[in-house]
Image 1 (spheres, chains in turn brown, orange):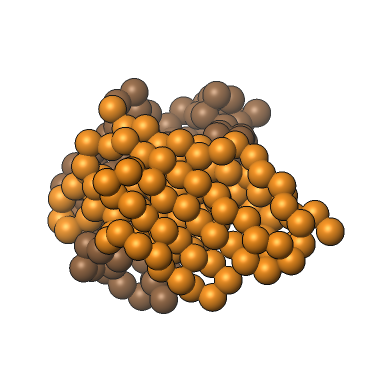
Image 2 (image 1 turned 30 degrees about the vertical axis):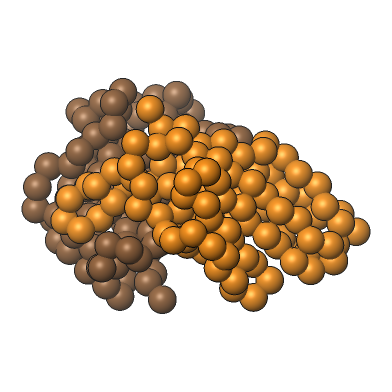
Length: 116
Length: 114
């Protein structure tokens, strides 16, 4: 089945640090990947849709200058949390789906980000 | 707006059957998904319905009624390892390049007790 790899799995860093998270589709090409954020005991909230070769589409309330997304190839999307602060601490998860479009989204293992 | 409702918590006994309901009101519909999420882990895909009716997959079954905006996930022969959150998600918006967005419910935390 489709495999999505996400790295790193855990990050602990000081306030003001920028953190890059990678999301890779291992055995399929993904023209679109999705980035979610999940706070404790909350559901997944879509942050942005990452499109290969073009600008990401951000959901309302998500700062594009804060959360930089780069989808430079058909198998890799990156999310960079710039100048992270404690309120950015969360579980970040990426997903992608194979074509055709009726395939389910498969999720990476998530990145737990803790900003001190 | 998008609205997906499911119970917050449920408890069931090992070996029993449990049904987790989900109702939705979304601006578009292109399928309903159920995911399982263990604490601290990413969701894993369980089932998918796009047409009305029941889809069976081993111990898990999922039902959809599009006219009622209703789905349920049925778990049979419950095992302790089934203790997890179960997320109902509707594929609604089109994101371009052949992909659709998912809107998630808040999840139902299932506790299986001996």
